[in-house]
Structures are given as C-alpha cells and as structure tokens.
Image (cartoon, rainbow, N blue to C red; front, side, top):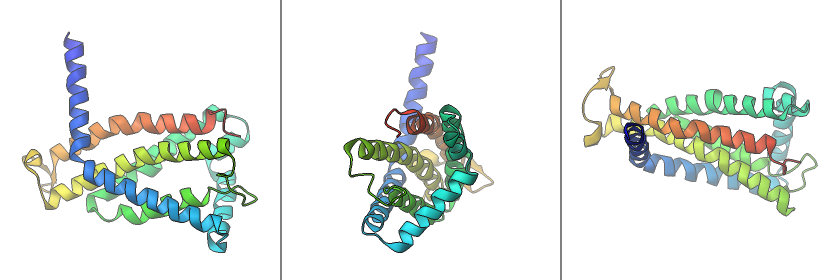
Length: 212
C-alpha cells in the first residue's frame, strides 16, 4: 500500500507540473509544428536554399553524427542510444536552460522545426509523403520527437515566466534569489516524462521495421 500511495503521489506531482507549464508547452509545440510546415512547403516546392541546406546537413550528419554513423554500419540499437543521448543532453537540456530567459530558445525551436520539415524529402528530393508507409514513418517519428522537445522547452520557459510573474504555487524559496525553487522541481518532474519519451522516439526511429 505504501508503494502504491507513493506511486500515486508521484504521478499526481508530475501531472500537476505539466498542468502548470501547459501554456508554454503548448505554445512551443505550435511554434515547432508551424516551423515544420514551412520547411515542408519550401522543400516540396523545390526551394533551392532549403534543398541545399538539407543536403549539406544530411551529408554532414552521415560523416560526424554518432547515431548516423552507427546506423550506416548496421548498428541500429547503438544508433538509437546515440540519438537518445544527443536529443536529451545536447538538444533538450540546453533549450530548457535557455528557456529561463523566456525568448531565447525560440530561434532554436524555429530552426529545428524547419529542419524537421525540409527532411520530408529524400536524397533525390522526392517526397517522403508520396508513399503511405514512408509518410506514416516520417510523421510518427517527427511527432514522437517534437512532443518531448516541446515539453522540455516549455518547462524551461515556465521557470522564466515565473520569475517575472510568480503564481501563488511558486511563491516561497528562490534559487539565487531569482528563480522559484518549486518551478525547478516542476522541470525535474516534467523530465521524468521527457526522458522515456525521447528514448521511445529514438527506438522507433532506428528500430522500426518501417525504417527503410
């Protein structure tokens, strides 16, 4: 019973943290998906800048990104773990920290979403959306990645907003006399969801039988 009670409290605290940060999370998700849509449109109408950028990015990734290198070598599980680590440590966490400034992460969010849109075409610049299987794989992969990113960024922005407009539930002790400590605890609670979501996204991306 004690374990069940503890688990129930943990779930309740995580749900409460997400609810408190719901508006920054939702706004971030909207920015991501609008940026993706713009990237998709540019790639599909044959915009030279978008296609050239896509080709350079993919070629660079194949040479230097550990996940891509492992994937090319046939080590799909290792590729998934590298991708998971990169998304979490190099992707999400810096954006969460930059979110303390409220506005700083959004240029990165826009750029990342745009990149997610321009890779909707293959190396020969044909659409990945032209085939139901490849379209489903691409869209699911994109969704699974952007949900935890939106939550991670939104959690950081929520801390920044609380500095300038502190709600009653964040009143109390402050870190460095500036940041509400309870807001930081909410970041940690949200990351308890973000971490497994990123792992699930990476496993799907590299281990899915639709990844052809």
